Amino acid sequence: MSEEGNPMFGPGEYRPDPSEGITVPADLPQPEIVPYSRNDIRQPCPRCGHSAYRDKQSHRTLHDLGNLDVWCPRDLVITYSQHYCTKCRKYFNADLSDLAPPGSHYTHRVMDLAVRWRALPPGELASLARPPCLRALCHDPKLG
Ligand SMILES: [Zn+2]
Image (cartoon, rainbow, N blue to C red; front, side, top):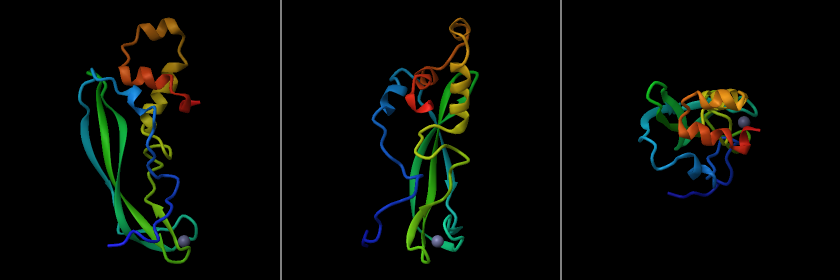
């Protein structure tokens, strides 16, 4: 098995995030692991629309909101397909942009909630029982 011809992936490619550790304090409850699959045999190429066959599979973990009553975090462990377009001669990943922004470790739901909470005045923040992971996320510069 050769890895040749496998240089670059699309914007959804997983990149290690040096700040990831600070959002997951050791005292957090263990996240609920939810397997999720986006693993189609064929996907239309985002560049030319050509129906491209799956070349291989990869995995990506997204931090999601779990049970909001007990603030149990939830991790989506996504198996997604990587495709090779024979027309463009390029690889691309199955589209996960409806779940999370490209390169993000958090789902849209987490980002939306963090942004909304960050917009509240500080006095109101104190009255909300916010989960530690979201508290850290509120200070994440990537939220803009
Ligand atoms: Zn193409």
